[in-house]
Length: 373
Ligand SMILES: C[S@@+](CC[C@H](N)C(=O)[O-])C[C@H]1O[C@@H](n2cnc3c(N)ncnc32)[C@H](O)[C@@H]1O
Image 1 (cartoon, rainbow, N blue to C red):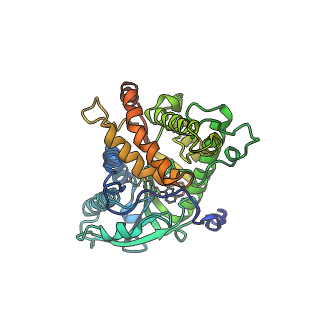
Image 2 (cartoon, rainbow, N blue to C red):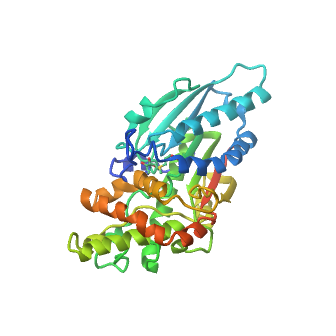
Image 3 (cartoon, protein in one colour):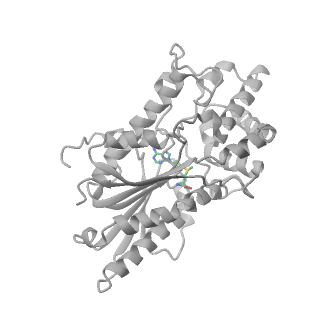
């Protein structure tokens, strides 16, 4: 692994997208993230199976009796605590089955997020009876976060669709990728879509290079992420419809003179959901990691009774996760008004949204270093 480029640690600055809403209040991510939990649970069996089949505990523990796990983009909880405990449980079970005569290893869990994440809430709400030593690791997961060959399992859920930044071409008024009247690539021009896709591919490539150095031979990287089926357009997905609605509310506010249209044109959400085909092609360009298992699913977390979306809760979840991105660009009054109008606007297209939520909009991938034996 000596030839891997080691400059990504230098790029690990604090200027990434704005984190989720902190604290434990009524608008917090802590209280509005159970849809992400339902979604990640859909992949839970597949993750457990991958760990059971692919993680060779005999090999891993030949040098140390500590298993080190990292959750990248852990936010403020509580989902991360369930995810980490279930990984510990499955490794313990594997250990008991494969090495019944050996003492149980110790576990250390690293909770990573952007430096501005509310780590205080995270650590104050940790389960008191956890079976691991905990540590916080602030920094962007698009750069290096850990020493060489130090992690056994890396997990990241619903975080890799957050780009490290808005693609630069979208910020240039003279570029063909200037995103007039839109806040995302949904329903935007080819140039805008290409700029987003390029940024996402560069970011993922940085993520993979860093992880390739940080995991031990035989270690695994588990990714659960928002996705789009190959061949579909983002505007056909429920989230795409929502981003178009948000843009149209902001343009209406601009017509009333409270903001300018140019402010709307200049604002773009730094998120991109890649298809499995795009993901595979970035991994194929990485010399050090292979995909050992992957899958798509339709978690339908928003469909309360498998048919209807609870728009109020849906908007609360979106707001808890994304409000900071809007607040960086618009005043508090404008952001409040946009979210207040959103529920009513989405209710007008609830039938289309509900039907779109039946698509496979979640993917999971398990990767391993290709020198894992
Ligand atoms: C929607 S939340 C998901 C949180 C958690 N994994 C869950 O499933 O509930 C996405 C998280 O990823 C974090 N994130 C986004 N980009 C990041 C980056 N480059 N480095 C570290 N964390 C990042 C955000 O700050 C946010 O807390």
